[in-house]
Amino acid sequence: MSTAMRYRRVHRAARCLRGLRVLAGALIAVPFGASAQTSDSAEPFLGTWSGVFTTQDHEYWTAADLACFVGCPLDLYDHLSELLADPANDSRPVMAL
Image 1 (cartoon, rainbow, N blue to C red):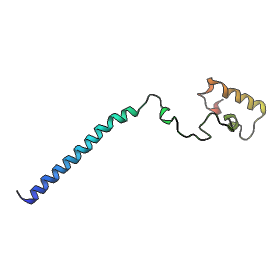
Image 2: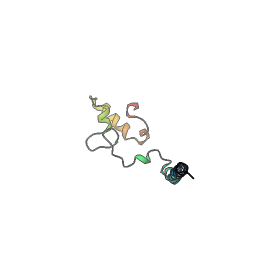
Image 3: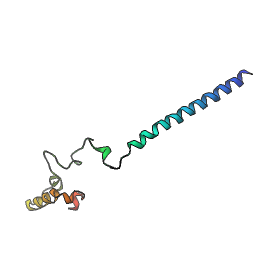
Image 4: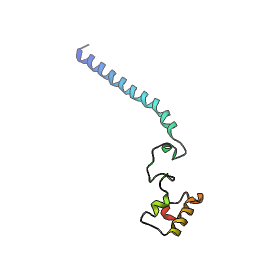
């Protein structure tokens, strides 16, 4: 057998082995990807840092403060605060209240 034929045979075997490694790696990774999926779409984000526009409660401001940023009459501010405190409105955006 010539050197060129041996080289081709070794090269073909190396390519096949490389393909088998990739396939084995993919098959090992599939179960981990499936277990990472959850039924709760918010669960992957729990514990993620939140900024001033993504938290409902903050020590120094409320959502009513942001909604009335340019200023609101006190009765409107109080009414908005009551609407925001009602758990029935948790699914509605602030500007829809």
